[in-house]
Length: 244
Length: 244
Image (tube, rainbow over all chains, first blue to last red; front, side, top):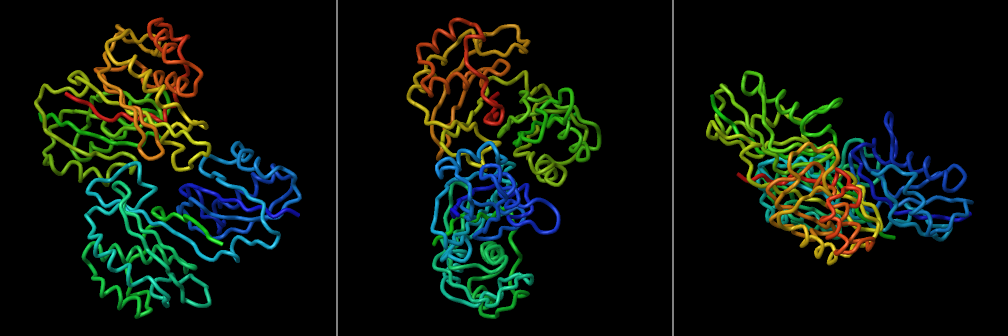
């Protein structure tokens, strides 16, 4: 059996997350169903990470085993007509039979996009979190320095998370403007459920002056979700990259 | 009666054009219906230009008469909760009672966005025309120089256009990349029906090497729509600005 690794970009607006939960359609379900036609049999994919309803991806990674004979360089092209326009396979590789998209991931990058402007932008309504006021981005940057490192991130883990250990390592957080959009890039070994959105929600409260960077430190050290800020909305979050 | 001028940005994806035709919902219909609540009576708006289904706007302009007493600076803010998130009022001004958004326009700017890339981008599927190959943007730029000036644009006017004269003046066309997106900005006194999309369709054929800049000149001078190229899709077009 061949083991195929796909990199997938998607606009998550119309889907009920990557992996279907309860009602609605998941992106994985679309990929498995539509690509079955390319490979000639049912597919079962492993995704590198789950994304919630409305969360986007530039570089989700999946792998699956197949007996299909389609040449590797035809997969991305052949999938164009099968997939809806909001899901795009950007790369296909044949990998070692042991490779597993989720278990072999060593680090991930998530990007959170914020649009701080007095006016809403109709083109960003599903693609960035609109904050009506200016943000003190220097204060945010100061607070991100507290996050970098290995910490118990319980204060930023949603109640629904079922992970055994709340300890994670964040290697770097980049803060920068891309045009009018303020982007926070989180590079870490792994993330708890809602962790990026919870960190961003509290960072934005720092940027609005509602909390200080030193408040942020106490919140992190307190390990109490109730002390931290709001959960940033799903539509500003992008699963950017998985490293192996 | 007060005369109010609004500048409106919208994502045209979900609408059947600015001015409703046949079935579906027009953006003007939404504006008139929702803003009536702010002004306390039915509204009848004049739009500076019609946009087709799927065409977007950064700066559509409308005006309307009202006996409503809402302060001018409260209109944009007050409309936020009334309008859907894909329609945003970016400016409201009280203008002379003679001002008419369409008849007083002296020039307009339309932008057409093209995404020339071997891979589709799921986030641009409704916001730029995806061309699978690289474009010879220098050849396009050369062809745009032929367009600038006062010409009979019959070769680029859709059959459905009902304008009396097909002569229009284009003062400038800018060609530039904004990131990965190639943008053509058309600055002119007025435009025939589908003129920007028809010009863009033929310019892209020049960029793909299917026609030369001198072919373009013959097409323009021939005044025959059948000799020109395809109509570029609606979703790459933006009504950017109206000048008075």
